[in-house]
Amino acid sequence: MDEYNLSEAILALKKGRIIVYPTDTLYGLGADIYNKDAVKKIFDIKKRPIDMPLSVAVSDFSELDKIAYTNDKIRKIVNSFLPGKLTLILKKKNCVPNILTGGIENVAIRIPDCDITLKLLSEFGPITATSANIHGLKTPGIISDIRMQFKESDVDLYIDIGELNGQPSTIIDMTRKQIKIVREGAIPKKAILDEI
Image (tube, rainbow, N blue to C red):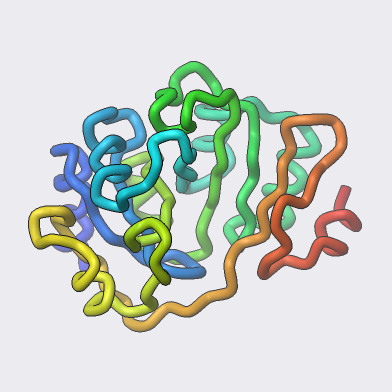
């Protein structure tokens, strides 16, 4: 993606619009996490129940630290596995809107290993990280199939880097002393447990 298109994506996000962007797994629907109307639109166009939290994509640990409470153990996991196919569930800070998290006190965060998206995140800030599909339908790996699920007015801009069919991320809950593996995905449970 060239600089011109990256600036278009940033402008769309600043205006409260929705983009489709690549990750290291599949395509995601992105909106400014601090714009409640944009976040609500994500739920609407996905037909996703409002009480089902959305994940957040950030560029690095310092951005993660702005929206969630961290400690040395969390920093170690981030340094070992991120950017990568790992989602961390952490205690959210007050700046994170309740609409994003379904009213719960935790937030799920990713740092995807995708250069284009990391550049977008470092220049714009945190965006929603939810699969680019209608809730309950299969997530397509190509933009043309994603376009078929949404109305033209739903998505302002698509960042197309070709087919994506990555293995889903591993999800770990780090909100308590004991780390809980919520879903074993691309990163094996043993690799995480060996690190802590």
